[in-house]
Image (cartoon, rainbow, N blue to C red; front, side, top):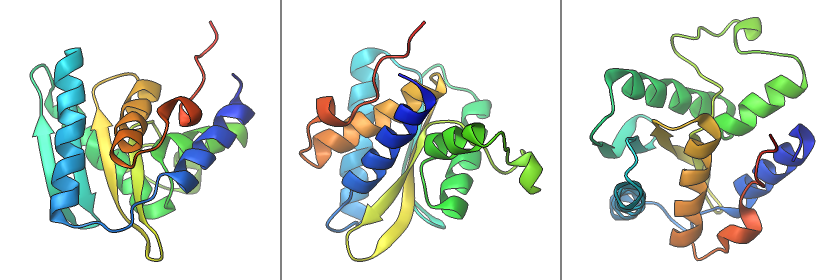
Length: 166
């Protein structure tokens, strides 16, 4: 699957994976769903669910490091600023031969690598982010998408990214 197909699929994910509402209980449930997936698969990840400016769920699993914490922060900042997934942002920038640095944004505070997905509430807009760090960026992104599909009763097979070609 090429860049343009990935861009289209990520845009579809961002449009389709929306919540009816989001509160502390919903954040806890999606966070624990992600944590359970990670533990079941033996993944070393940090998971953060937040309304902008307010953490609602956080866990760091065995094998993670302070670097993962920083990646979560930086990717989440990008979702807050651009209102799209960090992976979608990175794909878009790549397609335009652009970068965060070229836009004057410090890499110490922003990252356009996969793993942070916007929390969109129908009729309210983007209010926060769900972020994973610890895997390759595409896998971070897809773990969040898979958990969202399960939580929102959507068919993951219809929304997942195609396998990368070697």
